[in-house]
Amino acid sequence: MSTLVFLEHHGDAIQKNPLGVLSKAASLDPDTSGVVIGSGVGGLVEQAGKYGAKKVFVADDPRLEAPLPQPRVDVIAKLVQEGGFDTVLFAASVLSADVAGGLAARLDAGLNWDLSDLASEGGQLVGKRLALGDTVLADVGWSATPRLGLVRSGSFEPAETGGSAEKADASVELSDFSTKAEMVEQAHEEQTGPSIEDAEILVAGGRGLGSPDAFPLLEELAKALGGAVASTRAVVDAGWYPYATQVGQTGKTVSPKLYIGCGISGAIQHKVGMQTSQVIVSINKDENAPIFEFSDVGVVGDLHAIVPKLTELVKARKG
Amino acid sequence: MKIGVCVKEVPDVGPSRRIDPATMRMDRSGDRSLNAFDLQAVEAALRLKADAGDGEVVLVSMGQSRALESLRKGLAMGADRAVLVSDEAAAGSDLVATSRVLAAALEREGVDLVIFGQQASDSDGAVLWAAVAERLKMPVISQISEIEVSGGSVTAKRQTEFGYDKIKTPLPAVLAVSDALNEPRYPSLKGIMGAKKKPQEVLSLADVGVDAGDAGEAGSRTTVAALNPPPSRGGRQMISDEDGDAAEKVMAYLVERKFV
Image 1 (tube, rainbow over the protein chains, first blue to last red):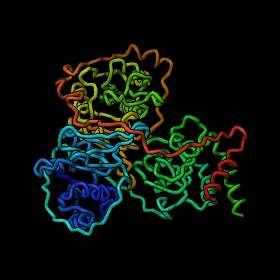
Image 2 (image 1 turned 90 degrees about the vertical axis):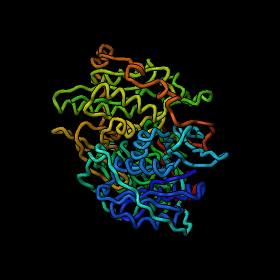
Image 3 (image 1 turned 60 degrees about the vertical axis):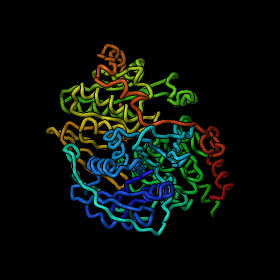
Image 4 (image 1 turned 30 degrees about the horizontal axis):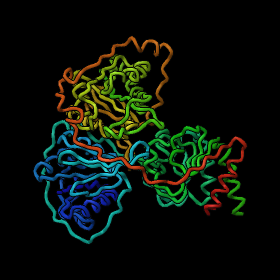
């Protein structure tokens, strides 16, 4: 096996999920390499070395500054073709999914996504994939090389090995169509207050709240329980609640001890961000809401009546 | 403006939704409908066409020939016609093979804009647009929460893990919209009645110029080796608020689990 891991960074650090994938890859293939792509990113090599990369390719170019996928396909495709990598792994993210999809078509390579584990079985790389709403765990594989894999967020913890990586330059030759999309503006809200990622109890609200006016009900309950309020993409895009509270594929991944979902249907976009919560309680008036499939307690009823009542009960007990 | 919307027929969620252990492919024999995430893509296309004042919205799909029944939902919403690539040799296609077939069908149409929905509900796939864009050599923008088309270019707001990005690109381009972008319209009775009469073309792989060996399992690069039960989450308790005592029952649970 000869593995390359795409090490997505934000600001001046490699993200936690790609470092986790790197650690896992290094445990299966001691010669694992990484690639960082951006502008002024040479300093990331050291960080990658600490988490198991033997060699880190650096594509450093002002044209690579914006986190757009297609120029990254150009860089990685060339590395794979020239470096002879037979496996390229990604940690799922908005950017990495688009890079992996483009790379699959460029190289006619098989791409397995949503992998929650990787193993080497009889010398063959096998991916574990929860499918059909997590009702089945499939062993997936590749019939040819290069093999591409997108790993589900939170699957692997980064493991520091204390190693150091050799730095190598990756050449940057961009296709015409890869540079047509331009970043006009990036609006990244600075977070204020405690992060929902740190809260042990989360009360989350979705479109089923009916209007932003219902959020104070959740805030009251969260306050009584000593937790924080989270939200879904639908309510954030609608402007009902701040982006920093969004849980899901394009938001934050949370694993609180208790998650209480109110008026949340359980769209996959949201589910991937909260499915590792220890206990999930869901309140929804639709008994067929998908969220009930992965809840420990499902409450069918009107959250506008149940949530305030629950808040009062919690307050009364706590005195 | 000619807009191609990539849509897919999927098995309905329920106990019958399964992977056939004999073929390791999705069992598509039960109840089926149009992938719900595709409705936002159809809606987005219809609104862009209305804003532009003219144009055509074409549904482009690959699937069984009877998938036309599901595609009619998009026609009932207002799409102008449907193109379905249906060929026995295309069954079992993975991402590499599917993107090749769809790109060929889109190329044959010569569209200005390609729109995808957030993901496929059967495969949980959310990467196809990037593969299709690569094959068409078009720019791609995904996770879109706002779209504006003017003067031969499209500006879209993309939501990422870090906030919002505004990205601009000339047409033709491939877009993937989020499931929070819009509320898809319900087809009117007139729309439903008229859908059957709208042009619906069923094409073979040869019609779109793809060799049988480049589609289906022969053209795929991924395999499914085994199916296992998922790790168990334990039992699930359902509570109804019919008697108005759900809050008390939830409270009892929270106390028992020592959250309060």
